[in-house]
Length: 82
Image 1 (cartoon, rainbow, N blue to C red):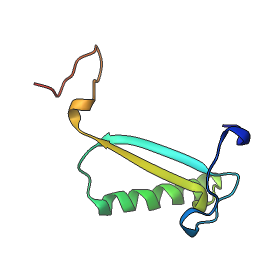
Image 2 (image 1 turned 120 degrees about the vertical axis):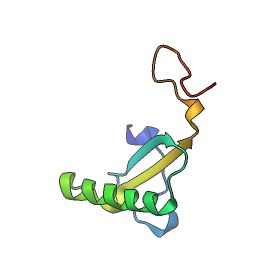
Image 3 (image 1 turned 120 degrees about the horizontal axis):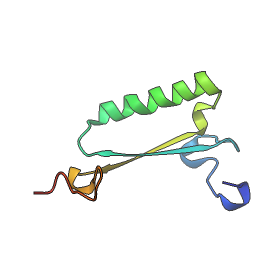
Image 4 (image 1 turned 45 degrees about the horizontal axis):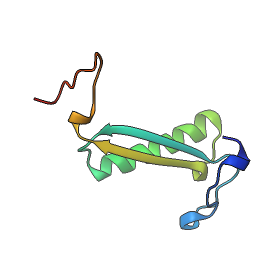
């Protein structure tokens, strides 16, 4: 987004963010343990830092957990609804 159309708190939770701030949103099935999520956040921020130079402070990750009946894998079929 263009900067004038994007608003964020550059110091939310005392993390100093830059103009290179990146939001990643992942939709996934419900049920992963908190420890796995923490490991994912850390690994993704580190990979983005190492491979493309994004500051770890600028990586904002949001997981949206849904149950299986909220997915259709194609043809308009609700595969997990009986």
